[in-house]
Length: 337
Image (cartoon, rainbow, N blue to C red):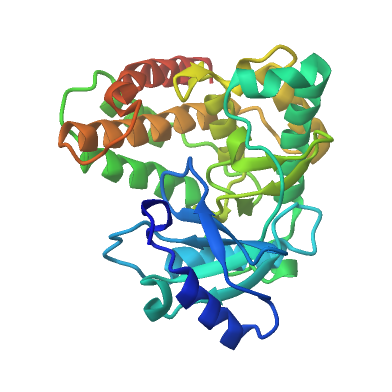
């Protein structure tokens, strides 16, 4: 097995698919890993005629249960007949004997996950704006889906969602403390003290941003990906975190796609979301502050693991520099809230 295909034995996969979905595959499978993911592993496999996508937990995932895979598979399957664009799912395998971990197979959808300004800039200012507006309206469509109508009424516990989220990310912070971070404990206390009244429950993606969607050549979103953090809760956390990502100036060491000419300002996107969804966004500063806290905790965790020699790859040595500005920005947001 090549280094690129670690975690994917194409012969074992072919034998499984022949049993589970006879006629689906017409010949020997070859595959390649899709780079860029930091969590679950994603591969494109083909029999020379058709292509599919296989997704599985990371290598060495000690607690390799079906939970994450079944969660992603379930929400995408539930959304397949809505106007939220998702890849069509084919099958979920919870038998760890096949690939060493649970996995699922879904449709291969063409498109680009824009990460850097140089990738999106050739679309021109109007094209860039169209992509951003499509990103926002797609989020609105997701938040308009009634969970019970698509079989997701038990997908999460909306009651007390924000309180649990703030508490959860504090625990994540405590698990990766390796240095003093001025203001971060006070930030947590302020977030807990100023909890807004929750917005009407909806399906929450959990990590909604430009490089977690595939954009087609026509500028429209072909598919929303990476549903591993999806749940039911307050959908404004999606909007708040998306805006925090937008205001990070660097992606992969280069100017972020959201800094391209034509990309709407956060205020314009909030106005569009409010207009198309009818949701009250008057407390959105809190949600952006929470998004900053969440991203700061994630960055601190990566910094901690890097300092322990547990991560490899470019950019990890500087990710700790993100934490202080995120904390400061969150405090500023709360002061304006």
